[in-house]
Amino acid sequence: MKRGESPLDRRDDVNYLPILRRCHMGALVLDNGSAAREQIHGLADLYRQDPEGVGDMLVKIADLKDLVDCERHLGGLGRAKLVRDEIVGELLNDVGGAEIHLDHRENHRALMQTRDLAHQALDIAEVALQRADELEDSTALARQAREERRKTPRLVFVTHLW
Image 1 (cartoon, rainbow, N blue to C red):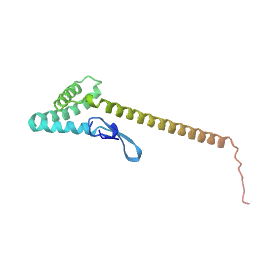
Image 2 (tube, rainbow, N blue to C red; image 1 turned 45 degrees about the horizontal axis):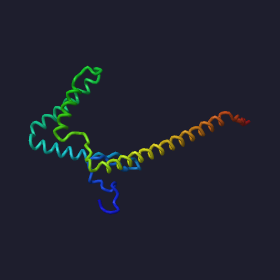
Image 3 (cartoon, rainbow, N blue to C red; image 1 turned 180 degrees about the vertical axis):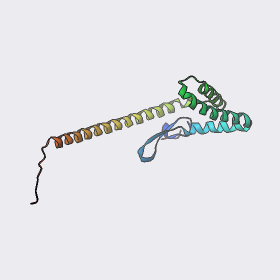
Image 4 (cartoon, one colour; image 1 turned 90 degrees about the horizontal axis):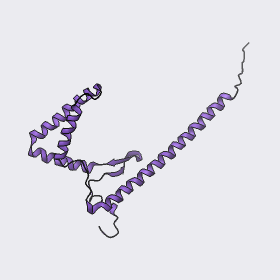
């Protein structure tokens, strides 16, 4: 790490951790694209070694998805979901797994990044609660104004043209 550089400034050192970033209109996104890219690279390498085997597994996973959708109406009586999950698990293991093993040399960085994510989540929750309170107050005021209008007697002027 360079002098004056924070552990949080070194995003490329721990590319397997999700990154919290802003999206359109200020929405927050937890981006796990770097880990997914690594898995796709592993899948491509695996495919290069055994294109027929990997291709067959992917087709089987897609076919089982349709069967899982049909079995959903049976109330859990089918086995397609279990079979599909086993095949997906086997393929995930072949491309390096889906578990994130933290490098012990980077534990401090991971801890700092996790704390940063937690603080950001608390900030989001605080803003959401404030907005909910504002909406509740404005709804109460609107309801009160509507009730006042209903209580106020209305004067009706009747004019007859003779």
